[in-house]
Length: 357
Image (tube, rainbow, N blue to C red; front, top):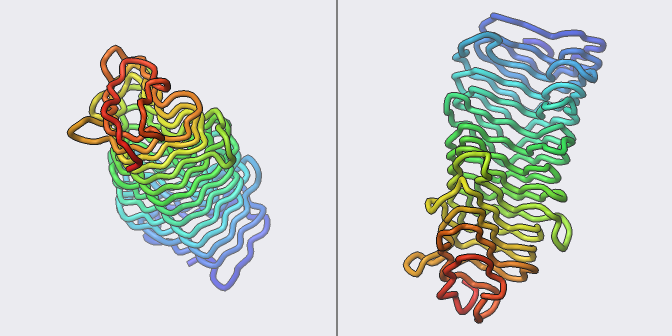
């Protein structure tokens, strides 16, 4: 064990232990360091109740995992730490086959280019839970290169500093991203080759941002997310954005989401097709509710009602550029009357619901 009872290390240039059976770092205060805690190539261990301050432009706050090809098989816990990191990642964990738990940590100011508050990769049994990440270049990166089951839940991510930042970036996983709150990051949640569930997240997008960005190969379930600009009016951004022409396939299922005060509620591009469905969602106080660009998602049929509640839209309920007929039946368009004046394209929107679902 290193630390205990408030040991203070000033001017520490490194705290590194490699190729030992177990590490425990507890109740330490590490300041003015070029490396916070580097316990690479260890079997299993724990870092908890530790405060770190790392010099600008230097190494990770906490670094754990395999430094060469292969995996470690032990279990790792990082809990209740506070990290002020001015250069690299705050918490970096890679290539651990055992259980990885990252919870109740606070990570601030990881402002180096392409650096994250919390970074996990190739950790197939990881949980990233109830952490605070603030003022970092990007927030949380959970990338399961070999198709794992990283769970990202109930984290708070604020004020990403990059103009192309991701509050949470999920890649190649198949499990849940749940209950997170994300403020002022260009992409609130970005999915890449991801087939999990994105559920009950609260995302407040900045001007021109994307609440949920569905990148190449993503087929997630997006359910009961709340996406909004933090002010009234519209902000030039998107609630949900996916399937752009250069980004490959994207066929999400959208259910029960609430999108308000953005310029375009849902944008689906050529990478999406009829496998993509939108049901029971609220889109309100937007410029355009749906922009369907050269694809044919299912927004509702007479046998499988859309039940979407679309109202207080400034410009268009639907814009469709597809040559195929877009199905958008049994939705509420803010009034019990023909919504044709705010439909653009080849759209079958009849019958519509006579009242809000």
